[in-house]
Image 1 (tube, rainbow, N blue to C red):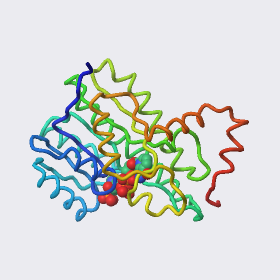
Image 2: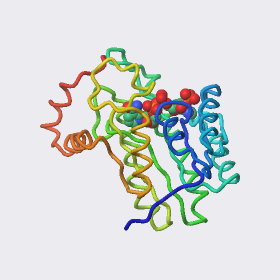
Image 3: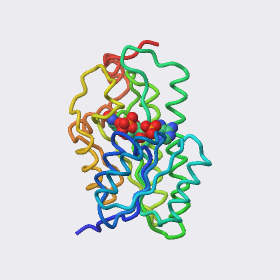
Image 4: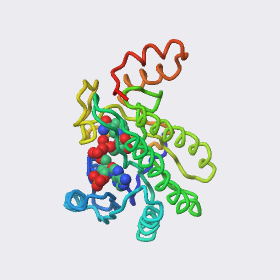
Length: 257
Ligand SMILES: NC(=O)c1ccc[n+]([C@@H]2O[C@H](COP(=O)([O-])OP(=O)(O)OC[C@H]3O[C@@H](n4cnc5c(N)ncnc54)[C@H](OP(=O)(O)O)[C@@H]3O)[C@@H](O)[C@H]2O)c1
């Protein structure tokens, strides 16, 4: 029988939309304190309202995760309000639609948001949890991070960094009593993918993806990768030798640059 991690105080970035919103709603119950973060006040308050209706106690935080000071301040404020059991670094962006070029500016923005925004959330979370020697941190990466993909270079590179960071922190933080989980989903139906003009295999509803993540996080695994068949394909792609992988990956549709 495994130990079940049932967090009562949960901090989620990117809770105003898509997967973060679905996670907030999935966790929202009586006895649960949710610290919901985003930049769009109107959407964030709507999510907060729905979570409150489900019985959760909700606090909202408006900030940009690329601002390290503001993000640290929000994490610390949330932890002082109710010590955090689980922090989900979910806020993230993707690049242009297939067929539109990835500009230098968008490449930098993706890296700033997906890598540094994640770091800005995770580092203060670890600082808060370390003295207590307990806590859980989930980093939302992607199956697109298993190998550099010409279809979304900046996005796959940024998610590769988040994946490696999560994997590394898992080993590093274990002895501190902090459980790190890297989450690599496939395609999820959200505003991030709504703009994609290509076929997305195994596209999953956000509420289903959130439910899978919540249930799996109860076991605090090192990695959550789904849907299983896509995760297997991504893993195979990651272990293929370069000479074999390059022509396969080059044949995938890509943006012109
Ligand atoms: N959808 C997929 O297929 C898929 C697959 C694998 C992984 N993921 C990952 O899942 C996460 C959530 O994506 P999603 O699909 O739910 O996208 P989404 O619907 O566009 O939501 C993105 C969320 O991130 C927030 N955000 C973005 N940049 C931010 C910043 N600089 N500071 C603070 N908040 C910021 C947004 O806040 P505001 O709207 O308030 O600005 C929004 O709440 C991302 O990390 C994404 O890479 C998604």
